Length: 625
Image 1: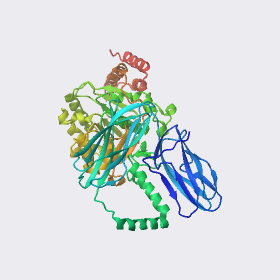
Image 2 (image 1 turned 90 degrees about the vertical axis):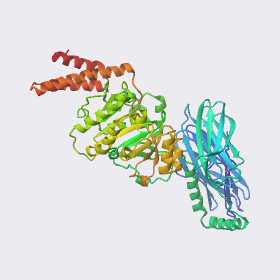
Image 3 (image 1 turned 90 degrees about the horizontal axis):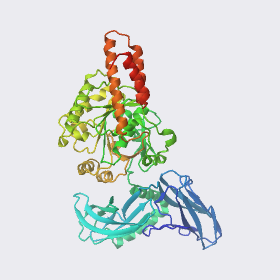
Image 4 (image 1 turned 45 degrees about the vertical axis):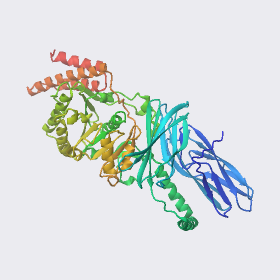
C-alpha cells in the first residue's frame, strides 16, 4: 500500500528554471522507521523540456542498502510521471542513515536529500518528540510546535500533554496549557502556543510532558524572541541575493543547509571532533559502545582510569550497567577488578547474561548472544564488620573479579569500612606504574556524604584519588549525584560519566559548566546513554555515548547461592592463613597450596561441589576442624 507522509505541510521541492526537469517528492527530510518495517513514497518527475526523456532514479551508496526505487521512467514533454520509492528496514542495522536519491536524464540531475533513523521496536518503547517550527518568533507572535508520539505497541491509547514555556535564563514558567491526545502506535500533530503577548526579547524553551498510563515522558526545544527585522526593502534585497546565491552555488548551500538541519534534529550529536576522542586501531582501548546516534565505536583509554572516574545517574538510568561495562573491559584485558558493593548487585559477574531486555540491544552493537554472553571468574566475599581484613596482593589475579558485599553494614559501618579499606591499600608497598594495574570500584558512594550520615569515608576516598595514580590503581566511583562532591575529590577525577538525572543540583552544575544544551540532554537521556567529559578530549567539551549491554548478568544472584560463595570463601581464607603460618614455621606446604589454588579456581567457576571436595580434603589432611 502506498504511504505518503507530509510533515506539517513541508514538501521537498527541487526545481530548475528552464532546465527541463523538476522533482516533487513526499519523502521527509528526516523520518523514523522501525527496524523490520517497509514504507512507500512517490516522486513526481516533470519533464519541462521539449523532448521525450528517460530519467534514471538511483540512491547513492549511503542509501542503497535501505532504499529500492523504480530505476527508469520515460516522460513526455510538459508531462509528469510518478516513480515509486520503497524504504525497507528489514535487514539494515539500527542508526541514522543519510544520503540522496539522484534523478538524472536529458543532461539534467536533481538530488532528493533523505534522512532516515532506523530504530528497534520493543514492547516498552514509547517516545515523545517536540520541535518548534521556527527558531525565532516575534514578541506578540504565535509559536507552532510539532509533536510526535510513537510506540511499538499497536493499540489505542489516550494521554495528556502539558505544554509549558520557560525563560531559558531564569527558568521561570511564563505559559502553561494542557491538551488531551489519542493515538495508536504513532501520532503526529501541530499545536499553536497562543497567545504569548508582550514576550520579552530573549532565549526560551518549550517543554512538553506526556502522561500515559501513569508514565511521564518529557521533551524540549528552544526558540528565541526577537524584534522583526524584515521590511519590504530588506525582503526585496534578500530575494535578489537568494536567487543569485542559488544560481551561483545552489548545490553547495543545499548540502550545507541539510547538514545543519540534520544536526538540529539530533538528540545527542553536538559538534564532535572524532579525531580528538579516545580510540583507534590500538587494542589497548576499552570499546564501551557507540557514539550516540552514530555507528562510530566509543572507547575509553585505560590510562584515563588511573586518573579515576565517576559514574552518576538516577536509579534506573543504566548507571550500574555502564559501570559494569567498564569493569568487563578491564577483565577482558586481564586487569584485576575489586568491587566494594553495598547493594550486592555486582555479584552477577559470576553468571552469564540471561536478560531479554538487555539481549534485545545486542543487534545495535553488532553483538552475538550465542557467542559473547559469558560469566567471569571471581570470588564473592562478605564484609560483615567495619574492620575488614583484605589482602590486596592476593587479589591481583589477571582477568579476575573479587566482589566484597557490604549490604549487611549500617551507614556508619559502611563509612568506617571504606576508611579501613583505603588505609589497607596505602599500607602495601606497591610498585609505581604508568599503566592500569588494578581497577577498584566503590558503589553507592553518595552514602559517604555527611548529609547521608557519612563521617570520614569521603575523606579517605579523597586521599585515594590523590595518590593511587602513581601505582596504576584506578578508582571508579558510582553515585546518584555528583554536585555534592567537593572540589578536592572531583578535581582529582578526570573522567565523568553522567547518566540521566533529575537532580536539579547536577543539572544546574552541568548548565553552568558546559551550557544549557547539555543540561537539557542529561535530564532526558535514554536509559544506557551517558554524557562523558574528560578535559583531554574533544577540546574539553562533553560527548554522548550509547553504552553496550553486558556479557554477564548485571543483577544480584539469589541469596542462597551468594551464601555458598560467602561460606566457601571463608573456609578458603582460613586454610590459606593456616598454610601461611605453617610455611613461616618451615613446614613443607607446596602441594597443599596447589590444592588450595584448585579449590579456589573451582569456586571462581561456580562449581561449589568440586570446591567443597578440595576444601574438605585439605581440612582432613591438615587436621583442621
